[in-house]
Image (tube, rainbow, N blue to C red):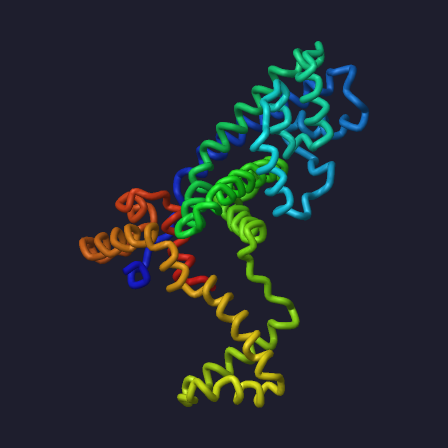
Length: 325
């Protein structure tokens, strides 16, 4: 089994390719920035951003941060169900590092077929092409997370997972660009994918929220239940004894135990892997086979992924589930 096999987590050679794609995107940004600076009709409020783009940087967000990501996910789903393509959509796709206002200004000029839009359209397309290439290169990492979170999920939840995964992928790449390509992009994408899974839980109503006031009580209850298990306290006496020790009602003990059960269902490795057995089993089998037939060295994540015919990010997710600390 995978939990009995130590895997070597080696960095892949993907980093060089991503940096090259990032450099291409930076050059495209510089070109767009220079064209914007040469544009006499550029509104003055966009001058600072155009100057930053001209040196391959971004000063976005200029239009504020998104605070309610589940709400944005709902609105994105609604828009996609009735969406009609427009000529300026490629400019709109650059909102993450052009900002909402500048991308809207460019998109409107292109939609309306204005001379300004015609002049800038080539530079916009060049940026969009470079962004699309970067998204395609790192997209399999997001796809692995969508597969992981979708395994065992209800059929009606899958479209939400796929949309949230795409939204988080684009957000992570756009922020990576805005940060100057400095972060570890695969890890950055993974962080955003985990956030996306939380957005879906909120949207479909399956999120487990634990209030700050419950955290201390849950910790005390968990320690107490472990003590009772060691002492082999009869189950029919557990709630009453816990209520007496914690000086709260039995009804409150029942509520806390319900919250704890819901939390444990989400974080307990056995339960997590049971829900995702279709993903976990071939990976565990591949790890065991490589360990048994090897030369004493621990198999690498990449080797297990190749044998199981999955993306390495899925192997990493299985390992993280086994050791969620």
